[in-house]
Image (cartoon, rainbow, N blue to C red; front, side, top):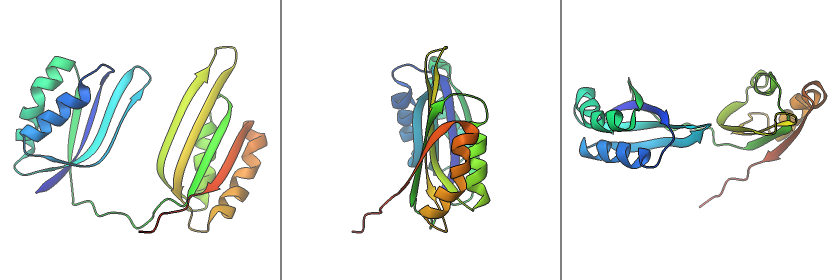
Length: 173
């Protein structure tokens, strides 16, 4: 089996996940890590797939769904993806008036201490008069949660946002 990174983007509507996953099943593909979500008025899929033949057969299987749902698809072959050793140990929450630079400021500070972002979700809401931005980041802080608290503290005033830093307890089975 070979692996590829599949990205799919299209206007949000019912049936996208069903059509894409059915096409992958038809092409004898297996779905590994995946993220599927609505972003604004669009729906996006990112996933690692295992495919048994060539990428051309995967593209052919996806083609009817792509045309019917007006999707944009990109397939990139990748080397075998080994699971990462870094499990998330810290959650950072950001909440405040929406303005340019929040994501760059927070992630820049985190990168400076070697923080590995594993998952980042954000949402703009509120009203035009009172725009609101909410962001949740899960990641691995090599020096622990306290190092994250210290590095983001100056951003509260600079960016005018509330920033919470919480340890993530991993379950042991």
